[in-house]
Length: 265
Image (cartoon, rainbow, N blue to C red):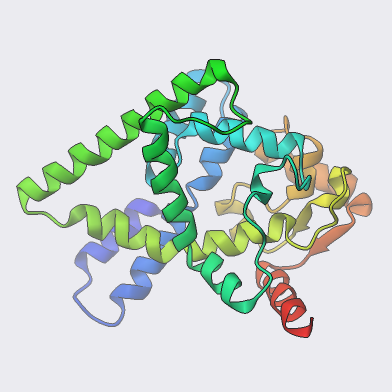
Protein backbone atom coordinates (compact mmCIF):
# COMPACT_ATOMS: atom_id res chain seq x y z
CA UNK A 1 0.00 0.00 0.00
CA UNK A 2 2.80 2.41 0.92
CA UNK A 3 4.66 1.67 -2.31
CA UNK A 4 1.50 2.22 -4.33
CA UNK A 5 0.79 5.56 -2.63
CA UNK A 6 4.42 6.63 -3.08
CA UNK A 7 4.10 5.86 -6.79
CA UNK A 8 0.84 7.82 -6.93
CA UNK A 9 2.27 10.99 -5.39
CA UNK A 10 5.26 10.68 -7.72
CA UNK A 11 3.08 10.93 -10.82
CA UNK A 12 0.57 13.44 -9.45
CA UNK A 13 1.08 16.91 -10.89
CA UNK A 14 1.40 19.90 -8.59
CA UNK A 15 -2.25 20.49 -7.77
CA UNK A 16 -4.65 20.83 -4.82
CA UNK A 17 -4.82 17.02 -4.77
CA UNK A 18 -1.15 16.62 -3.90
CA UNK A 19 -1.39 17.69 -0.25
CA UNK A 20 -4.31 15.33 0.57
CA UNK A 21 -2.45 12.52 -1.20
CA UNK A 22 0.67 13.26 0.85
CA UNK A 23 -1.45 13.31 4.02
CA UNK A 24 -2.95 9.88 3.27
CA UNK A 25 0.48 8.48 2.42
CA UNK A 26 1.92 10.11 5.54
CA UNK A 27 -0.80 8.64 7.75
CA UNK A 28 0.03 5.13 6.58
CA UNK A 29 3.74 5.90 6.91
CA UNK A 30 3.38 7.20 10.46
CA UNK A 31 1.37 4.11 11.37
CA UNK A 32 4.56 2.12 10.97
CA UNK A 33 4.30 2.80 14.70
CA UNK A 34 2.10 -0.32 14.78
CA UNK A 35 4.75 -2.81 13.56
CA UNK A 36 7.34 -0.95 15.66
CA UNK A 37 5.18 -1.44 18.75
CA UNK A 38 4.50 -5.09 17.99
CA UNK A 39 8.16 -5.76 17.23
CA UNK A 40 9.47 -4.25 20.46
CA UNK A 41 7.15 -6.68 22.23
CA UNK A 42 8.78 -9.32 19.99
CA UNK A 43 5.36 -10.76 19.18
CA UNK A 44 5.22 -9.77 15.50
CA UNK A 45 7.42 -12.64 14.28
CA UNK A 46 8.79 -15.89 15.65
CA UNK A 47 12.42 -14.90 15.03
CA UNK A 48 13.88 -12.38 17.46
CA UNK A 49 16.24 -10.99 14.80
CA UNK A 50 13.29 -10.26 12.51
CA UNK A 51 11.40 -8.43 15.27
CA UNK A 52 14.49 -6.37 16.06
CA UNK A 53 15.20 -5.60 12.39
CA UNK A 54 11.65 -4.42 11.71
CA UNK A 55 11.71 -2.31 14.87
CA UNK A 56 14.99 -0.69 13.82
CA UNK A 57 13.65 0.21 10.37
CA UNK A 58 10.20 1.38 11.50
CA UNK A 59 11.73 3.37 14.34
CA UNK A 60 13.91 5.26 11.87
CA UNK A 61 10.80 6.60 10.12
CA UNK A 62 9.41 7.85 13.44
CA UNK A 63 12.67 9.07 15.02
CA UNK A 64 11.97 6.53 17.75
CA UNK A 65 14.92 4.19 18.41
CA UNK A 66 13.55 0.80 19.48
CA UNK A 67 15.88 0.13 22.43
CA UNK A 68 14.75 3.36 24.05
CA UNK A 69 11.13 2.82 23.07
CA UNK A 70 11.11 -0.71 24.51
CA UNK A 71 12.22 0.57 27.93
CA UNK A 72 9.75 3.46 27.79
CA UNK A 73 6.89 1.26 26.68
CA UNK A 74 7.51 -1.57 29.12
CA UNK A 75 7.59 0.96 31.97
CA UNK A 76 4.23 2.18 30.67
CA UNK A 77 2.91 -1.38 30.81
CA UNK A 78 4.21 -1.95 34.34
CA UNK A 79 2.83 1.34 35.67
CA UNK A 80 -0.15 2.15 33.44
CA UNK A 81 -1.94 5.32 34.59
CA UNK A 82 0.35 5.72 37.62
CA UNK A 83 1.08 9.45 37.57
CA UNK A 84 4.41 8.98 39.34
CA UNK A 85 5.81 6.11 37.27
CA UNK A 86 4.05 5.86 33.90
CA UNK A 87 6.34 7.70 31.43
CA UNK A 88 3.36 8.41 29.17
CA UNK A 89 2.09 10.69 31.93
CA UNK A 90 5.34 12.65 32.26
CA UNK A 91 3.73 15.23 29.98
CA UNK A 92 0.27 16.19 31.18
CA UNK A 93 -2.72 15.25 29.06
CA UNK A 94 -4.23 18.36 27.42
CA UNK A 95 -6.68 20.24 29.59
CA UNK A 96 -7.43 23.14 27.24
CA UNK A 97 -8.32 23.45 23.58
CA UNK A 98 -4.98 25.09 22.87
CA UNK A 99 -3.06 22.27 24.55
CA UNK A 100 -5.16 19.70 22.71
CA UNK A 101 -4.50 21.28 19.32
CA UNK A 102 -0.80 21.50 20.13
CA UNK A 103 -0.69 17.80 21.02
CA UNK A 104 -2.66 16.74 17.93
CA UNK A 105 -0.40 18.80 15.66
CA UNK A 106 2.41 16.38 16.49
CA UNK A 107 4.93 19.20 16.88
CA UNK A 108 5.60 18.50 20.59
CA UNK A 109 6.31 14.87 19.66
CA UNK A 110 8.89 15.79 17.03
CA UNK A 111 10.52 18.34 19.33
CA UNK A 112 10.81 15.81 22.16
CA UNK A 113 12.13 13.10 19.85
CA UNK A 114 14.75 15.40 18.31
CA UNK A 115 15.99 16.74 21.64
CA UNK A 116 15.96 13.36 23.42
CA UNK A 117 17.72 11.49 20.62
CA UNK A 118 20.51 14.09 20.49
CA UNK A 119 20.82 14.00 24.29
CA UNK A 120 21.09 10.21 24.23
CA UNK A 121 23.66 10.35 21.42
CA UNK A 122 25.85 12.47 23.71
CA UNK A 123 25.59 9.79 26.39
CA UNK A 124 23.09 11.58 28.61
CA UNK A 125 20.62 8.75 29.15
CA UNK A 126 18.99 9.91 32.38
CA UNK A 127 15.53 8.35 32.34
CA UNK A 128 14.88 6.37 35.52
CA UNK A 129 13.07 3.61 33.62
CA UNK A 130 16.29 2.76 31.74
CA UNK A 131 18.58 0.61 33.87
CA UNK A 132 22.28 1.55 34.00
CA UNK A 133 23.34 -1.58 32.10
CA UNK A 134 21.08 -0.64 29.15
CA UNK A 135 22.00 3.03 28.90
CA UNK A 136 25.09 2.48 26.77
CA UNK A 137 23.10 0.49 24.20
CA UNK A 138 20.43 3.22 24.09
CA UNK A 139 23.15 5.83 23.48
CA UNK A 140 24.74 3.72 20.73
CA UNK A 141 21.43 3.32 18.94
CA UNK A 142 20.76 7.07 19.11
CA UNK A 143 24.17 7.69 17.50
CA UNK A 144 23.39 5.13 14.80
CA UNK A 145 20.13 6.89 13.98
CA UNK A 146 21.74 10.32 13.84
CA UNK A 147 24.50 8.97 11.60
CA UNK A 148 21.89 7.45 9.29
CA UNK A 149 19.95 10.72 9.09
CA UNK A 150 23.13 12.74 8.48
CA UNK A 151 24.28 10.44 5.66
CA UNK A 152 20.82 10.39 4.06
CA UNK A 153 20.49 14.18 4.16
CA UNK A 154 24.05 14.71 2.91
CA UNK A 155 23.47 12.31 0.02
CA UNK A 156 20.21 14.04 -0.83
CA UNK A 157 21.84 17.48 -0.84
CA UNK A 158 24.79 16.23 -2.89
CA UNK A 159 22.41 14.75 -5.45
CA UNK A 160 20.27 17.87 -5.53
CA UNK A 161 17.27 15.73 -4.62
CA UNK A 162 14.25 16.62 -2.51
CA UNK A 163 13.22 12.96 -2.13
CA UNK A 164 13.74 12.91 1.65
CA UNK A 165 11.50 15.94 2.12
CA UNK A 166 8.90 14.70 -0.37
CA UNK A 167 8.69 11.03 0.62
CA UNK A 168 9.47 11.26 4.34
CA UNK A 169 9.60 14.62 6.13
CA UNK A 170 6.50 16.29 4.68
CA UNK A 171 4.35 13.13 4.80
CA UNK A 172 5.18 12.26 8.42
CA UNK A 173 4.46 15.83 9.50
CA UNK A 174 1.08 15.63 7.76
CA UNK A 175 0.36 12.13 9.06
CA UNK A 176 1.39 12.56 12.69
CA UNK A 177 -1.93 14.15 13.82
CA UNK A 178 -3.77 10.92 12.96
CA UNK A 179 -1.44 8.96 15.24
CA UNK A 180 -1.87 11.52 18.03
CA UNK A 181 -5.68 11.15 17.80
CA UNK A 182 -5.27 7.37 17.92
CA UNK A 183 -2.87 7.31 20.88
CA UNK A 184 -4.82 9.81 22.97
CA UNK A 185 -7.78 7.43 22.84
CA UNK A 186 -5.82 4.55 24.38
CA UNK A 187 -5.87 5.96 27.92
CA UNK A 188 -7.22 9.52 27.69
CA UNK A 189 -9.94 10.11 30.32
CA UNK A 190 -9.65 6.51 31.53
CA UNK A 191 -9.64 5.86 35.30
CA UNK A 192 -6.29 6.17 37.10
CA UNK A 193 -6.47 2.67 38.55
CA UNK A 194 -4.26 -0.42 38.34
CA UNK A 195 -6.80 -2.77 36.74
CA UNK A 196 -5.91 -3.05 33.05
CA UNK A 197 -9.49 -3.63 31.91
CA UNK A 198 -10.41 -0.31 33.52
CA UNK A 199 -7.43 1.95 32.83
CA UNK A 200 -7.23 1.30 29.07
CA UNK A 201 -9.77 1.89 26.32
CA UNK A 202 -10.79 -0.48 23.55
CA UNK A 203 -11.98 1.43 20.48
CA UNK A 204 -13.71 -0.91 18.07
CA UNK A 205 -13.49 1.44 15.08
CA UNK A 206 -13.72 -0.33 11.70
CA UNK A 207 -11.99 -3.17 9.89
CA UNK A 208 -9.63 -0.91 7.93
CA UNK A 209 -8.39 0.94 11.01
CA UNK A 210 -7.97 -2.33 12.90
CA UNK A 211 -5.96 -3.67 9.97
CA UNK A 212 -3.49 -0.83 9.54
CA UNK A 213 -3.17 -0.36 13.31
CA UNK A 214 -2.36 -4.07 13.73
CA UNK A 215 -5.42 -4.71 15.94
CA UNK A 216 -4.17 -2.29 18.58
CA UNK A 217 -7.64 -0.71 18.85
CA UNK A 218 -8.17 -3.70 21.18
CA UNK A 219 -5.99 -1.84 23.64
CA UNK A 220 -7.45 -2.96 26.96
CA UNK A 221 -6.97 -6.56 25.82
CA UNK A 222 -3.36 -5.78 24.91
CA UNK A 223 -2.68 -4.29 28.34
CA UNK A 224 -4.33 -7.20 30.11
CA UNK A 225 -2.26 -9.72 28.11
CA UNK A 226 0.77 -7.91 26.60
CA UNK A 227 2.35 -11.19 25.51
CA UNK A 228 -0.49 -11.94 23.08
CA UNK A 229 0.42 -11.34 19.43
CA UNK A 230 -1.65 -8.70 17.68
CA UNK A 231 -3.62 -11.20 15.60
CA UNK A 232 -4.93 -12.89 18.78
CA UNK A 233 -6.45 -9.69 20.17
CA UNK A 234 -9.82 -9.92 18.34
CA UNK A 235 -10.37 -13.36 19.88
CA UNK A 236 -9.36 -11.99 23.28
CA UNK A 237 -11.92 -9.22 22.82
CA UNK A 238 -14.69 -11.76 22.29
CA UNK A 239 -13.89 -13.23 25.72
CA UNK A 240 -13.16 -10.01 27.61
CA UNK A 241 -15.56 -7.45 26.11
CA UNK A 242 -18.08 -7.66 28.95
CA UNK A 243 -15.36 -6.92 31.52
CA UNK A 244 -13.79 -3.93 29.74
CA UNK A 245 -14.99 -0.79 31.47
CA UNK A 246 -14.11 1.82 28.85
CA UNK A 247 -15.02 1.16 25.22
CA UNK A 248 -15.83 3.34 22.24
CA UNK A 249 -17.05 2.93 18.71
CA UNK A 250 -14.63 5.26 16.93
CA UNK A 251 -11.58 7.45 17.47
CA UNK A 252 -13.41 10.56 16.35
CA UNK A 253 -16.08 9.88 18.99
CA UNK A 254 -13.45 9.52 21.72
CA UNK A 255 -11.72 12.74 20.74
CA UNK A 256 -15.00 14.62 20.40
CA UNK A 257 -15.97 13.59 23.93
CA UNK A 258 -12.51 14.61 25.16
CA UNK A 259 -12.81 18.06 23.59
CA UNK A 260 -16.40 18.48 24.77
CA UNK A 261 -15.30 17.60 28.30
CA UNK A 262 -12.73 20.41 28.24
CA UNK A 263 -15.24 22.92 26.90
CA UNK A 264 -17.87 22.02 29.49
CA UNK A 265 -15.54 22.29 32.48
